[in-house]
Length: 370
Image (cartoon, rainbow, N blue to C red; front, side):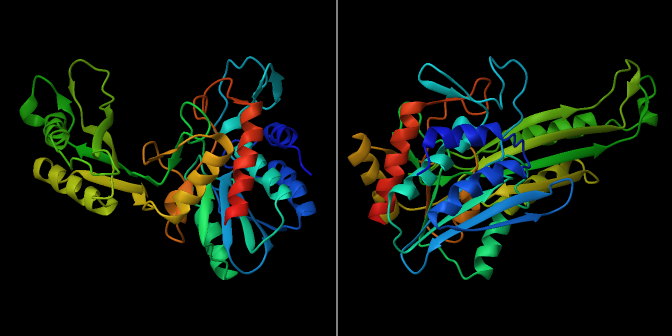
């Protein structure tokens, strides 16, 4: 039977900066095979978004079918760790290492939980090496592979670190959508003393951004906060003091609730920019649409397991950034529940040993209740 702490340490020790392949998947596969999981690994994609390795593991057959989803890739560690980011170390009651909470610890906890609970129906693990990056060849490709195998889960739990102040206090039942839009206004470079011979793109871009910044998309609703537009970059690249620039660019990021749709937002921004700068280039990418799993059987199942194991009444929330649940929500009801998120993506990321053991028991209780 796998030990959750030792498995978490082994996963941390397998360096897996996004996009991840290789040794970290070896560690997980070796933990799953003795538990009667049928493990399928495959690599998808080419640079710049790939190649990416994915793992699909299935145990049992028939219903009910509970899927657990997660990612083995991590963000780059950065400089300044107290110990090696990929050299897991226990100090006091904490285990340190990149991925401890986001989200190798949760994956280890689910594997340890599956070892405790006799197989009933179908249990699957949907594990990607590309969640922290573009996610082009990650979970979407796993979903395609599952469709080819006629594997449709009844429900899915994503092990993202959702807990805020104590383990079990938050379950995510939805997420806002995300789109990033690049705007480039082209003018004509010239001498500042001869403006009639030039075409300054900056005023046109500024006027467009002022109109965009004044937009109130919505006021939110019962489950989502208001959608918001943020200007996140503004660039001219002009280091001279006597030159009118020939190009001005901006980037905006929109986080939106389920009252909006990504393509419609891009079209709206494009229309505004065109009024001020008809020849401007506007390019948008939708990273994910908003989704909501209405409170019901799945959230009740997970919150009931948390309450019985931890004595905590979980809050249902849609706050935070995007996750791969945005893809999985198209397939079946999905919620997210995992470790504390206080140290994710930070230096000296760490998980409490007690939380690893407690999360294992919550996941085991979920498996018993499905």
